[in-house]
Image (cartoon, helix red, strand yellow):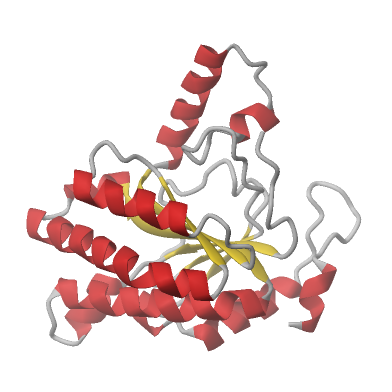
Length: 244
């Protein structure tokens, strides 16, 4: 197993919901909402480390999102490519590592090459690990991990299974501490099912383009006052978050 970096601070997971509704409310095409949402990602990524986040996992495109109209999917894929091109240097400047989790066999060759370049270029980042879930399904990742364990002959355990859940064998990422979903809906939508076993949930009413750094701060402050017992009785709340 690869040695885990980013072992201190929060693992924050974000379901970026509401881009299309945001655009519709403003009389704009849905694609405009996705563009606004991409701009907001930059703000959140920049703010997160100062709020105690060391691992940030964003749900950008689910395996079920392929069901959307072709023009919207094409626009989203172009937007992902544009994001990768524009954010690599910013990640380097801010000491952020970027990883893409999920399937890659259904992505274009050009986008896969961009992903590989972004991951290689930012591999040394130590301030925060930014993980973007693209063509991702939590259930599919569990099936994939089980298949890999079967083929490897390794002993099946929680630890060995976790090493395959990112789609990058040998690299286990610790469990999610706080999951935030914007847009008002209250469901996981097949996101990080294993990793969210003991996550705290926060459902924000704001649509994703309107969920800025101050909203993120409020969510993390709410989390800091929760009593996390993990099935026991002792208060195991993250002490380092009390000062946020």
